[in-house]
Structures are given as C-alpha cells and as structure tokens.
Length: 409
Image (tube, rainbow, N blue to C red):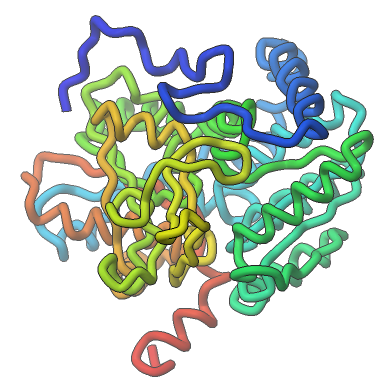
C-alpha cells in the first residue's frame, strides 16, 4: 500500500472524544464515567512527564528485558520459499509475552493515582500473569478474572498467577471465556473504584483505554522499526500480527503508520467462517457488524437478534467477540488488511516454528505465523515479512498435545 503523505497522520488519533473515525467512544454507565475521566486526566499528565517515562523506560530495559530481538527465521523461510520471514521476539520478554509492556505502564499510572489494587481480565492467561507480576513488583494487590473454560486450558498460567500472589476468580457465566471475564472485571471496578484500577489488557474498551494500551505497546513497533533499518538496511515489506482485541498488532503497526509498509492483521478463523465457530469479526459478513461491547463502538460478532455471538478459537487469547476500534478504523481506511487463520493452520504453524527454528510460539502468535507461511511463497525472496511473535507457547503445550495427531506429536 502506498501511503498518502499529504493527509493528516493517523498517529494523531483518537480525537478528543476518544474516536478513531466512527469507532471508539465511551459507552459506560454513569458510575464508570467519572473514573474514566480521572484516568484520562492522569494519563494526559503522565504521558509527557519526564520522570514517569524515565522510570518506565528503566523498568522495560532492566526488568522486562527490552529491547527484544529481531530474528531472521532462516530455515522456516527456506522451507516456505519466497519472502524471508523475520520475527519480533516478544516471546523473550519477561513473563513470556508482550502483555508485560502494558501491564507495567498501567500499574505505574495506577500508583501515581493512589490506587493500590489492580483488577485484570485474562483469556490465555498472559495478561493475568503480567498483571500479577507487576503487582508483586510494586507491592500492590491483584485480582484476576478468567473464564472457567480458559482456566482449564491454560492451567499453567493460573498456577503462575497464584504463585505471584494474585486472587484468580473463575467466571462460570455465559461462554466462560474472555468476554465474560471482562464483564466481571468491570463489575469489580465499578464497586471498588476508589482504591482499584482496572488494568485492561488489550486495545479496546472505553476511551482512554485503546489509546493508553496502544501507546504502551508501541514500544514493539518503535524497536522493530529501528532494528529493521539496522539489520535489513530498510523497512520490511509487510507487518503481520494476530488480532484478538488487537494490542500486539497495534503496538507493532502504530510506529509504521506513516511508512509505505503493508499491515496485515490475522483473526482467529477457528473451524472455518461458514460454520460460525470462529472469532473473525471482519471476515464474517453475516455476524460481524457494528455494535457496542464493553464500552466501545466497533465490530462485534452478533447473532440474528443482535445478541453477542458465541466464539471459538484454539487460542484462548483470540477467543473474543469484538475488536479494538483503531483496527476497525485502519480497515475502513484500507490502511491495514485483515484476514484469518484456522485452528488447523495455526497448529501447523506452531509445529513448523518448533521444528525449523527451535522456538515454541504461543497459539495466538501462530495465527500470524500461519499467514506469513501462506504469503511467503507468493512473494519475492527480496521481500521481508515481519511477524510479531507476541508470546511463547509453554502455556499451550497441553492443548497442542491433545489436538495434534490424537495426542502424539
């Protein structure tokens, strides 16, 4: 895609009302409107505060282990043929995923606001682990809400959260996955807003959360852009990242928005679009429609009556009915392209990276990897595809073992 350099930079969004074009906003009950304004004001003051940014930068370097490397997947690229596949190694960040970038930043904001308790939702468990980690680091209380189905398939992360001192609350309502965990986290926040901060884990929810999470995750793209120039001598031809709520993807995309770089987000295709067992909001024209979920106007999977549809993905972190508003806006502008990978394609990509590169990826990241493997043979060997390897797959080993070849890897 060729970017029109005469238009206003997309980096200036959201607007003062929290909108990315027609997407975004703040659709919340009155009890949460005041706390959101308080959070917006606090972040506005801290965003350009030198002391805050210095402390965050020091912790990202000395505690999280940033910058994470940029790795050329030589053997995988040779096996696929065509374009070279590069990996931004968020799997090597402390706690094993990109979620720590946002959790750390928001915890510092909460501390500056005088809040001593963190509330989080989690699907795959990585955001819950990251929140529990920073709570331990900063001496804060932590409550994590997680769907009971997700707790069963992500048991190692549940253990990690509890070892770190977090109270992990199973959610048995609804689909017992991420959507329902967010519902319970919001209820907790509304009840305990005086001393608690809701540390939302993805680039969604009511304003200012999509902006805050995007800003904190943009460290991924800033590093990747500089690393590409240093290691490749140029920018990549395409960026590829999985999209649930969309934090790892927007974190990679945002620093490249004004560049002539293709951007590809990969949703969870589950068992296929036609059967309805998926979490692909953009790919399903029948059920993926404009709506409001968890305080934000964006694309939402809905049934014929406009109720939130059940979703499915082999990856708990992508098993969500809505998508971040900035992604919806980038798609509407055709600045980014969104596709999907099925469970089977993600599982195949998971195994390929293990066997060709000695890297065990998260199932979420495997969706992005699957698209890179599909795309590479269609592109020239001179092209570079940059995949955001958003997390490692230790948490997914039981799931993969039970699904691949009847349990025999």
